[in-house]
Length: 195
Image (cartoon, rainbow, N blue to C red; front, side, top):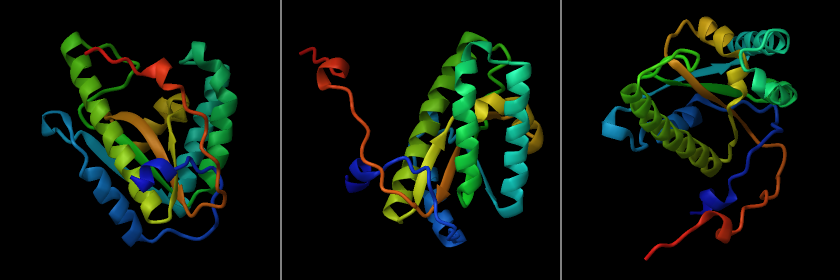
């Protein structure tokens, strides 16, 4: 319970490397998550050092392309945040790319049955990511869950050489900040009891 309430999104990291032993513990927590129909639809690709630099250069190219030729025209107000996130990722020690092995690009149409499977698998992946974030916290590692990969979707999936759906990224490193908890919505706004 402590990790649940003390975990924060970390955007500043020290330059101390995270050991493979600790990364393995974090990934094991992700693998332990529940999944719909036990499909375990996740795949994790771990990047560090020069490989991380190549990944992030590719992401940067995608963000710049999105500014000029948007695939997400209604989301253009998120470009500045994506650029900021890229800076944070560059300063982290490790990036974990999270893929859904049962889904395809969100830029392709799918039928309703496939959409339900995709939703269930996305919920499973969310549980997996949360497990990793909480385990990282327990091990003294800071983390940031990142969805801004969407702005570079085609560039990143080409770089990764995958047709699997790119869901998100996780930045990891030793924290160089202690942010306070951000405001939470009031119970009356989000909880409804019907007895």
